[in-house]
Length: 131
Image (cartoon, rainbow, N blue to C red; front, top):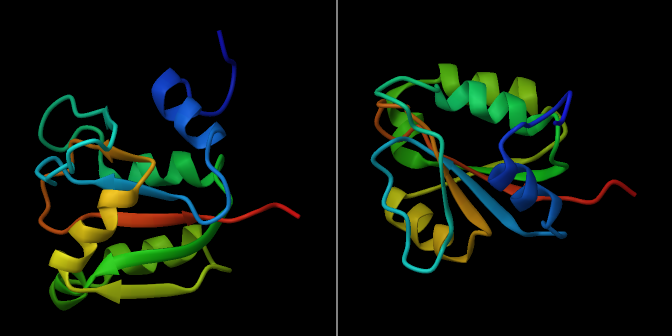
């Protein structure tokens, strides 16, 4: 049994298999996972686990080159974007309309479904390199 880091085998494997510029989506419970994209379902119930907590755990394992959010999230609030900037201070942030966000998710390595029940609490992490 692993002692540290991500304990979930599917999530750990997805991150270990990522290469430069691959995408990982961390999504709320209602996000539509595109056909053919693996779903890593962590949802237990509404609110558990929270999207930000899952993202925090992933931040310790994945080298992130860029972060993408939906315009609709930015129009609603700024607490999640600020928290994400704290997790990925060196990564540039961009934003796209939610429909474009969903199109981008079609080429993700995986979509991590959390128990988050807040609209637009989704993020696309672009994998970087450590060298």
